[in-house]
Length: 181
Image (cartoon, rainbow, N blue to C red):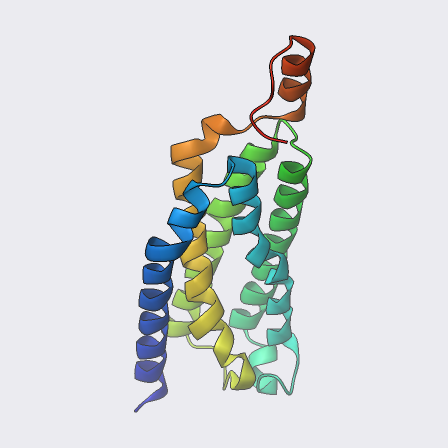
């Protein structure tokens, strides 16, 4: 089987499997959790996005890949997505009033960056063999796309449940009990 076809089959099957698992198990699990806890769980896998920098390491991929525009955009795009994810995670965890805006920015950028890397690698090529890095685009990227979708879904359906710390303090001062710890 030619590598391009193999990639398409593996990517498609991974996307199918992760989509089904997300629909059948992850989304129902998240629906019974407090919004902030559910959002933190969904952000967690992206705290490893810095690992995309390995596409710049000769030996993990062919040396020609490390010098390609594909590797440059993919590696630094992943690193920037990691940074957004980390900031979003910390802000949500601390219940900052601007947290959801950063989560939206991360989720839009992160999902577009994944799609850009897959399309750039598929259409323009990667510059050589991906070697051990092959597992990232056929395993982690489909998982990431499904989790990005679940974050969008959670934000659209339940973001009104988010209780920033200032709101929680005001509610406590008024005698009301905040909805989330």
